[in-house]
Amino acid sequence: MLQPASTRITHLYLALTVLLVGGGCGSPPPLDKQLETLASWTATMQLAKERHGAGAITITYATQLRDRADEAFQQASTTIGQSAQTHSDSAYAAAALDSLRTAIRQLEAEIGS
Amino acid sequence: MKKWAEVALGVVTSIGGFLEVGSIATSAQGGAEFGYQLAWVLVLGTMSLAILMEMTGRLAAVSQRTYADLLRERFGYRFFLLPLVAVFVVSLLVVISEIGGVSIALQIATGIDFRWWAIPTAIVGWFLLWRGNFTIVEQGTAMLGLVAISFAVGALKLHPVWPTLGRAMLPSLPSHDRARYWYLAVSILGASISPYLYLFYSAGAIEDEWTIEHLGVNRVTAGMGNVFGGGLAIATLVTAALVLAPREIKVDRYEQIALVLATPLGRAGLVFFIMTLFITCFGATLEIVLAMAYLLAQGLGWNWSENLKPDKDARFATSYSVLILLAALPIAIGMDPLTLTNISMVATAASLPVTVIPLFVLMNDGDLLNTHVNGWPSNLALVVIALLSIVLLVAALPLQLLGGG
Image: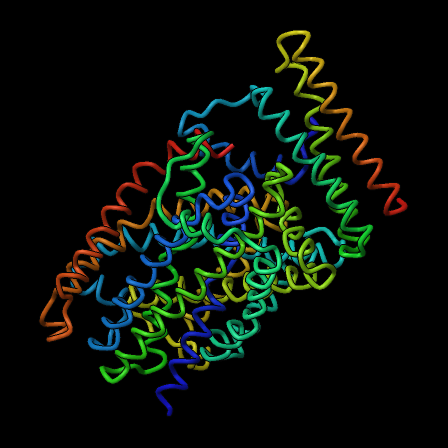
């Protein structure tokens, strides 16, 4: 699993709680939730690009946002396939991943990294 | 004149002390996902906290004992263990989150990963507690915390739709994702009505040597301070509603929240966000660690006062020293601060009955409060808060499972 390190450790420590309350683990989030997350990070990248262009945010901060978006992208890349049940689901998933990848590249071009 | 100065100082302290990692995170999440719709929860939480603080402050000023002292004295040691353990566990989770907030602020400012900042934050905090006094801890950080007013400026610059915001002050049902809506409502209430806030306030009344003469100061501080503080939390929700919600950005990481001020206020907004997150979370770290040490010392009958030299209350000083370093460890090893914040806010909401329900008994005890016992309006308000706390206890766990993802 390519989850972000911090999230992985948090989940490890909270595993006992999850077991106690009988929460399900091991299955990826539903497709609609993953698509929402990807769209949210795509929009975050677009806003960060716009704000950096306006001189409102630093390269240091924009880079951190890029890194977090990249983590979300990596995570979704490994799990979204399991959640996609039909061809159209797969097409939506691929389009959402592609949008985020493009948005990350555009921010990288903006900040020159 | 001195009284007015005390009132002004108390109000400023409450404003600066209201916003912290929980209220910033949950208000931003609420605004990003449901627009203005959860504003009523902040109103409810602010009113409840103001009422609880007024009562615990009055209890301390009249009886000359803290709320924790009275819990142990009136209900016995065996009963006292319940709030002691519940508040202690929940407060530990919250203080870990606060150290996470400080660390994230430093990460955004420097680019150095948040994990590296946890231990230095704890050491600086410990040093201030060890060498400082109650005034420095309470008023110093709260004064600096006024930088949080930048959220109000940001919200005004974004031109909120006032009639819509006004309507959101009244409860309404969500049009989508009900579990998530109620989960965020519980989180916001947990962030607003943290037991440490009124336990710390009660201990502060004793530290500041309040008497019956201070009942007016207490009423104004608890009322106005929380109204202004709650206003800042609503401003946070409004900025998220106007910056993040239209773009369908959900807050998955703390880093995203800084955009809500960088959008209306430009580069200054980013700087104000970093300062607000750093100062308010650092101030809350000191207050919560002290509140936990107070609770232990008052419950176990140790010497305690932040105004004493550490060698005069060694067990109290040892408690806050160990606690602040212990709280830094989970962040230092990389636990995600936002996940922790959300869980700790829901746990806080669930812990409320053990400190709210006994207050009803104490506030009606004529031996303790003489003529200052609750009247029927205060009792009615406290019953409503107690019922709310029971609902939160029952709902917290299912909502964590259904809406916490």
